[in-house]
Image (cartoon, rainbow, N blue to C red):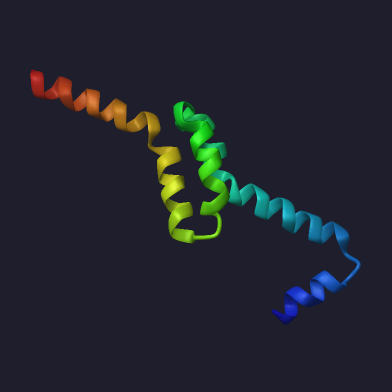
Amino acid sequence: MEYINSILESDNYTFIGLILISVFILWFLPAMLALAFNRKHFKYILLACIPAGFSLIAWGGVLVWATTGKTIGKYASKADSDNNT
């Protein structure tokens, strides 16, 4: 905690800005991944990122939700076609 206080008390605003940008990117990483993997639920994932950032478990759940959107449907349809043959 003392290290964080020393950073905030310093006049190194560039470093503080980089830390804030990094935290913002990490906080909304599931929403950014949802743009590639789960566009159908992007709005819901974006809204879920806001409170989920306070809990590592919830953030991980949103991350899984964001990355498994299309893949579940793809594998489910593949499994159905394999079972029919």
